[in-house]
Length: 585
Image (cartoon, rainbow, N blue to C red; front, side, top):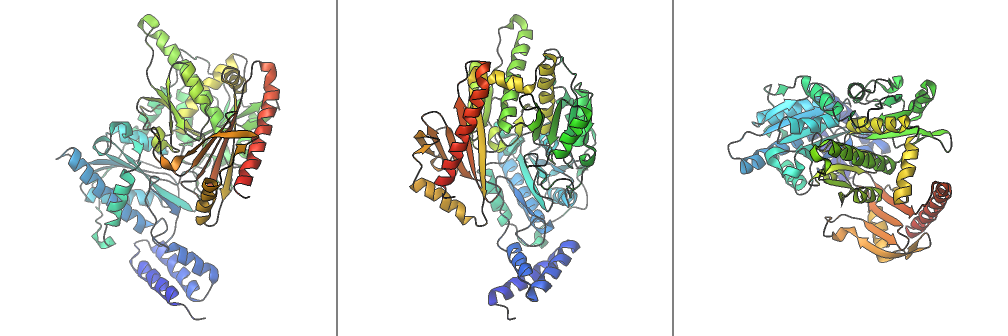
């Protein structure tokens, strides 16, 4: 079989990479992949071509991809270049903002394959560049790294994690702080224009020979940093206002790094009855008991629900592998079966509970008249229920683009969430989503409901009676070719639907044009006469088109709730059909 000129160039690139790769494992795997490609094995040639199909791009999510050799994979070469570029950015940004100040940065990592190696090499490159560098003492949750950026007054932070991605992936998440970013973003994930500035510095990095690694000189943090986070997070509990603590909890860290920290925090907050899912308790980068380590995925909570049924638990709490998300499951009294709550349901419960906490805290103040100021926020694709909860309590509410990099930056933030199981209940501690601090408040509101003879579903129903039944659903369409996403969005822009669920579209917003309160993003928002909302956008992290649906139905009495639920479900099904038709599916 004769190789084409393109194949020969590819083979030459691969040999060059293998010869200079500092990692003997990826060098050896690349050499074997190259051999099979030269022998004409189609799958090997396809994998090799994809590994060298451009350079893994640095964006607002940092870096995230499958582990492996080549510029389009996560490996030590790509990470070294990213660390060198980020260090150059930090030196320049801090030099401009505070001349003569030495930048400070902290690096954390989870228990995925190569996370510790990527983290230590990042610390070595930062140190060689003259940055005062701290390395986390062990594989720890992402929220703890975000906490450390603020607690140590750092200018930058790196978390090596792929969150809830498949086992073969890893990632590189960047935070900015102190002199490198505005105050509202101190300790938050990067957004534009910082992503482009850092990417430019990465692109300017020359050969790996120009990247220096210090042999030492960084500080491995004392385990007390974890103890500080646990103490501060446990202290979020408010026993004076919500004293109930009788709650039987089953917790799963989903083979991730959050188990020990989450149990310790819950125990210190007064929740002593916590059972870990034994098969998923210890960190394991292979995630052997789940097909996909994401609590949202079907089957991911099966072991936790089996454990809960076995011990007679009141509630199941689940964190994703880096513990920045939290999922909740409980026994639905209507069906008698366990079910996982949607992110919007948990988001509303937490929002209402934080309103109640703030009201109780205000009563404790002298005079009892001073009201806490602040803002509630959620992403534009999340439910509108939080805005009604906030308004009825006299609080301002903001909508942001999708992603906690936006939610966490809202000035005066009291509480923010996104429907993808992300909750920020203590922005003064962690300016990011945090599945462990959220678990504390979820346990507190669930214990309070139990003490009053109710379930969290009863609490949800009370919110629906006050603000209307808000029901949501999603449709995700995975594509093999990213070009199909553009084609789908163009189809909608050229021929937008006139109605959804038999309700005429009254408002169509092209989010790509931006607005007074939102920067531009690729997406379309449809609002119908009966307040049904449909948002369609390409995913920012996966080859998917994502559709978010919400219907609102007024409810005047508890007796109307069953009928309202059925009507809402039927309406969502109708809207789903219309969305599929609009997309040509």
